[in-house]
Length: 200
Image (tube, rainbow, N blue to C red; front, side, top):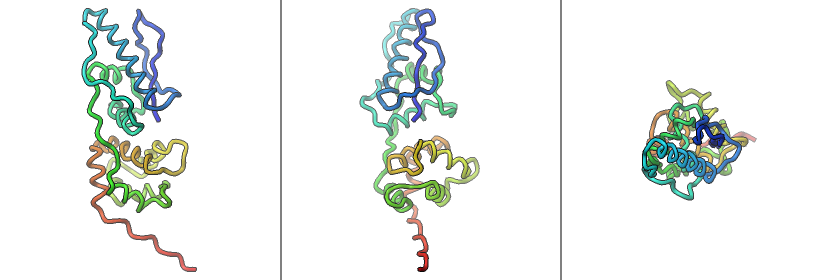
């Protein structure tokens, strides 16, 4: 998943280099980097005459992978797939945002298993779901669905329920809708018709 890192080379005692993707992953990696930026902002505040006190909500620990990916999408305001220095600085200074519950409800899980075969969903099944649930429309094409699938699966060719939850988070931010709204668009609909049986 995307992660961030800070160039530790000091600029008059303060790190001001842009933030770019890093090789390390996981909630501990992202949370520690946010704390690092917060410490550096506290140093800057002290140099400018502020008291350096932390503001806003603290980073919840431990954070699940799903929470972390949701937080990343919240911070990535310009939708570049990277968090730049300004975006992390805004997070640090304004405090932790509310992280919505992105876990799939039982109804959403049933829809996943209706489309997935053997507990894993391939690209064709994902595209079918996006089309039948009304996600493929103006401003969101099949190519966009393909990109989100690849982003959620990373190096894999199929996604399990956990990665399906990741994909729905990415879908929500791509379509500028809440995660709850995306779940609502999936779960109320009837189950997809069974695939026709091949004649033997």
